[in-house]
Length: 128
Image (cartoon, rainbow, N blue to C red):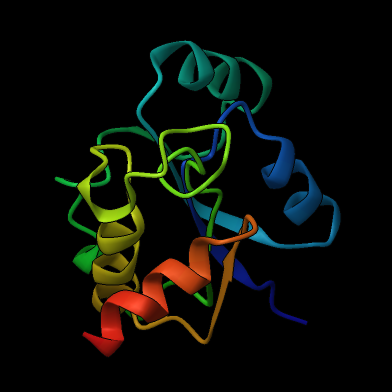
């Protein structure tokens, strides 16, 4: 039985990655901007391909055909009540970058951690 591969965006310190690992997935890459989180990932799983890079400049085309799932835990402040709810005007809005990466990779499945309100904002923009 072959393993299912995953490319994680905004991987953080690896909580979701551990879940994927325990479910039998292999990691093609884990993309994270925070250097401390990357250090934690590398320390705990030196065999993982940790990519310390901003999603806005990350080129995911080399992963096309190599990844079954793109998973992302995108920042919620652009859309949440905890943030300023600036939506697409917030520099932390990584939804457009995630959609571009998904298009570049063409995975079989996508998992995006969702917060209340984010999909409403995305769909509202698409109706304009």
